[in-house]
Image (tube, rainbow, N blue to C red; front, side, top):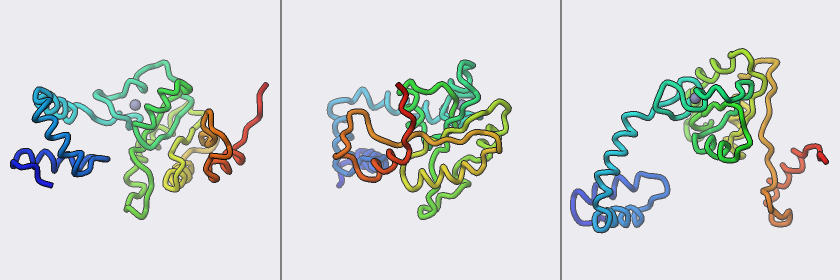
Length: 200
Ligand code: ZN
Protein backbone atom coordinates (compact mmCIF):
# COMPACT_ATOMS: atom_id res chain seq x y z
CA UNK A 1 0.00 0.00 0.00
CA UNK A 2 2.15 2.87 -1.25
CA UNK A 3 1.41 6.31 0.18
CA UNK A 4 2.80 8.24 -2.71
CA UNK A 5 6.24 9.69 -2.09
CA UNK A 6 9.50 7.85 -1.44
CA UNK A 7 9.99 9.36 2.06
CA UNK A 8 6.44 8.67 3.09
CA UNK A 9 6.60 5.13 1.78
CA UNK A 10 9.70 4.57 3.87
CA UNK A 11 7.96 5.83 7.02
CA UNK A 12 4.99 3.56 6.32
CA UNK A 13 7.27 0.58 5.71
CA UNK A 14 9.09 1.18 9.03
CA UNK A 15 5.88 1.70 11.02
CA UNK A 16 4.54 -1.58 9.66
CA UNK A 17 7.36 -3.41 11.39
CA UNK A 18 5.96 -2.40 14.78
CA UNK A 19 3.68 -4.78 16.69
CA UNK A 20 -0.03 -4.33 16.11
CA UNK A 21 0.38 -1.94 13.18
CA UNK A 22 -0.94 -3.20 9.86
CA UNK A 23 -0.65 -1.48 6.47
CA UNK A 24 -3.71 0.74 6.94
CA UNK A 25 -2.73 1.89 10.44
CA UNK A 26 0.82 2.59 9.25
CA UNK A 27 -0.46 4.73 6.42
CA UNK A 28 -2.92 6.54 8.68
CA UNK A 29 -0.21 7.32 11.27
CA UNK A 30 2.23 8.54 8.61
CA UNK A 31 -0.37 10.78 6.96
CA UNK A 32 -1.60 12.11 10.30
CA UNK A 33 1.95 13.05 11.25
CA UNK A 34 2.58 14.79 7.96
CA UNK A 35 -0.72 16.58 7.59
CA UNK A 36 -1.75 17.38 11.15
CA UNK A 37 1.12 16.74 13.58
CA UNK A 38 4.11 17.88 11.61
CA UNK A 39 5.78 19.42 14.67
CA UNK A 40 5.72 16.00 16.33
CA UNK A 41 7.94 14.43 13.67
CA UNK A 42 11.33 15.87 14.70
CA UNK A 43 10.40 15.42 18.39
CA UNK A 44 9.60 11.77 17.76
CA UNK A 45 12.80 11.28 15.79
CA UNK A 46 14.84 12.91 18.56
CA UNK A 47 13.12 10.90 21.33
CA UNK A 48 13.75 7.65 19.45
CA UNK A 49 17.40 8.52 18.89
CA UNK A 50 17.86 9.47 22.57
CA UNK A 51 16.23 6.23 23.75
CA UNK A 52 18.38 4.29 21.31
CA UNK A 53 21.50 5.93 22.76
CA UNK A 54 20.61 5.73 26.45
CA UNK A 55 18.40 2.76 27.24
CA UNK A 56 20.29 -0.33 28.28
CA UNK A 57 19.84 -3.38 30.50
CA UNK A 58 20.27 -3.23 34.27
CA UNK A 59 23.42 -5.16 35.15
CA UNK A 60 21.62 -6.88 38.01
CA UNK A 61 18.02 -7.61 36.99
CA UNK A 62 18.16 -7.16 33.21
CA UNK A 63 15.31 -4.62 33.31
CA UNK A 64 15.60 -1.58 31.07
CA UNK A 65 17.34 1.42 32.55
CA UNK A 66 19.65 4.28 31.67
CA UNK A 67 22.34 3.71 34.30
CA UNK A 68 24.33 0.72 35.50
CA UNK A 69 21.42 -0.26 37.79
CA UNK A 70 17.68 0.29 37.37
CA UNK A 71 15.72 2.35 39.89
CA UNK A 72 14.39 -0.79 41.62
CA UNK A 73 17.82 -2.42 42.11
CA UNK A 74 19.15 0.95 43.19
CA UNK A 75 16.36 1.76 45.59
CA UNK A 76 17.66 0.22 48.83
CA UNK A 77 14.05 -0.02 50.01
CA UNK A 78 13.12 -3.28 48.28
CA UNK A 79 13.15 -6.66 49.99
CA UNK A 80 16.20 -8.39 48.54
CA UNK A 81 15.04 -11.71 49.93
CA UNK A 82 12.26 -11.86 47.33
CA UNK A 83 12.97 -12.25 43.62
CA UNK A 84 10.13 -12.19 41.12
CA UNK A 85 10.88 -13.56 37.66
CA UNK A 86 8.95 -12.04 34.76
CA UNK A 87 9.14 -12.32 31.00
CA UNK A 88 9.09 -8.64 30.06
CA UNK A 89 9.42 -5.09 31.38
CA UNK A 90 5.67 -4.69 30.74
CA UNK A 91 4.97 -7.54 33.16
CA UNK A 92 7.24 -5.92 35.76
CA UNK A 93 5.37 -2.62 35.38
CA UNK A 94 2.02 -4.40 35.73
CA UNK A 95 3.11 -5.96 39.03
CA UNK A 96 4.55 -2.64 40.21
CA UNK A 97 1.24 -0.94 39.35
CA UNK A 98 -0.61 -3.50 41.44
CA UNK A 99 1.27 -2.15 44.47
CA UNK A 100 1.33 -5.65 45.93
CA UNK A 101 5.02 -6.46 45.75
CA UNK A 102 8.02 -5.12 47.65
CA UNK A 103 10.75 -7.46 46.44
CA UNK A 104 13.08 -7.35 43.46
CA UNK A 105 12.76 -8.70 39.94
CA UNK A 106 14.59 -10.48 37.19
CA UNK A 107 13.41 -9.80 33.64
CA UNK A 108 14.03 -12.67 31.24
CA UNK A 109 13.20 -10.56 28.16
CA UNK A 110 11.34 -13.47 26.63
CA UNK A 111 10.36 -17.07 27.18
CA UNK A 112 11.46 -20.45 25.96
CA UNK A 113 9.85 -21.31 22.67
CA UNK A 114 11.61 -24.20 20.94
CA UNK A 115 9.28 -23.97 17.92
CA UNK A 116 10.45 -20.38 17.31
CA UNK A 117 14.06 -21.32 17.95
CA UNK A 118 14.14 -19.49 21.31
CA UNK A 119 16.23 -21.56 23.70
CA UNK A 120 17.80 -20.91 27.11
CA UNK A 121 20.58 -18.81 25.52
CA UNK A 122 18.06 -16.03 24.86
CA UNK A 123 17.05 -15.67 28.51
CA UNK A 124 20.16 -14.07 30.10
CA UNK A 125 20.40 -16.96 32.53
CA UNK A 126 24.06 -16.23 33.37
CA UNK A 127 22.97 -12.96 34.91
CA UNK A 128 20.08 -14.67 36.70
CA UNK A 129 22.41 -17.31 38.15
CA UNK A 130 24.61 -14.55 39.59
CA UNK A 131 21.56 -13.03 41.25
CA UNK A 132 20.45 -16.43 42.59
CA UNK A 133 23.81 -16.83 44.32
CA UNK A 134 23.42 -13.59 46.32
CA UNK A 135 23.15 -14.18 50.04
CA UNK A 136 19.85 -13.43 51.71
CA UNK A 137 17.65 -14.67 48.90
CA UNK A 138 14.72 -16.53 50.44
CA UNK A 139 12.04 -16.89 47.78
CA UNK A 140 11.91 -16.93 44.00
CA UNK A 141 8.44 -16.14 42.65
CA UNK A 142 7.64 -17.13 39.09
CA UNK A 143 5.36 -14.62 37.40
CA UNK A 144 5.84 -15.80 33.84
CA UNK A 145 2.75 -15.81 31.65
CA UNK A 146 0.12 -18.46 32.06
CA UNK A 147 0.83 -19.83 28.58
CA UNK A 148 2.52 -23.04 27.49
CA UNK A 149 5.75 -21.11 26.90
CA UNK A 150 5.47 -19.27 30.21
CA UNK A 151 4.90 -22.49 32.12
CA UNK A 152 7.76 -24.29 30.37
CA UNK A 153 10.04 -21.32 31.06
CA UNK A 154 9.12 -21.29 34.75
CA UNK A 155 9.83 -25.01 35.04
CA UNK A 156 13.18 -24.72 33.27
CA UNK A 157 14.35 -21.70 35.24
CA UNK A 158 13.09 -23.10 38.57
CA UNK A 159 15.64 -25.91 38.21
CA UNK A 160 18.41 -23.28 38.48
CA UNK A 161 17.29 -22.09 41.90
CA UNK A 162 19.71 -23.32 44.57
CA UNK A 163 18.43 -25.68 47.26
CA UNK A 164 17.02 -24.09 50.36
CA UNK A 165 15.35 -21.21 48.52
CA UNK A 166 11.57 -21.33 48.34
CA UNK A 167 10.17 -21.47 44.80
CA UNK A 168 6.63 -20.21 44.21
CA UNK A 169 4.34 -19.43 41.29
CA UNK A 170 1.88 -16.52 41.31
CA UNK A 171 -1.67 -17.71 41.78
CA UNK A 172 -3.59 -18.15 38.58
CA UNK A 173 -7.21 -17.64 39.03
CA UNK A 174 -10.34 -15.69 38.85
CA UNK A 175 -10.29 -12.00 37.99
CA UNK A 176 -11.93 -9.67 40.53
CA UNK A 177 -15.59 -9.38 39.60
CA UNK A 178 -15.34 -12.51 37.50
CA UNK A 179 -18.31 -14.84 37.45
CA UNK A 180 -17.48 -18.51 37.42
CA UNK A 181 -19.89 -19.52 34.70
CA UNK A 182 -18.26 -17.14 32.23
CA UNK A 183 -14.72 -18.13 33.05
CA UNK A 184 -12.77 -20.23 30.59
CA UNK A 185 -12.44 -23.79 31.88
CA UNK A 186 -8.64 -23.92 32.13
CA UNK A 187 -8.56 -20.75 34.27
CA UNK A 188 -11.28 -22.18 36.48
CA UNK A 189 -9.47 -25.52 36.73
CA UNK A 190 -6.23 -23.82 37.75
CA UNK A 191 -8.07 -21.66 40.25
CA UNK A 192 -9.48 -24.76 41.91
CA UNK A 193 -6.10 -26.52 41.92
CA UNK A 194 -4.30 -23.43 43.21
CA UNK A 195 -6.76 -22.75 46.02
CA UNK A 196 -5.47 -21.20 49.23
CA UNK A 197 -6.56 -21.09 52.85
CA UNK A 198 -9.50 -18.79 53.50
CA UNK A 199 -8.50 -16.25 56.11
CA UNK A 200 -11.25 -14.64 58.14
ZN1 ZN B 1 17.70 -3.76 38.07
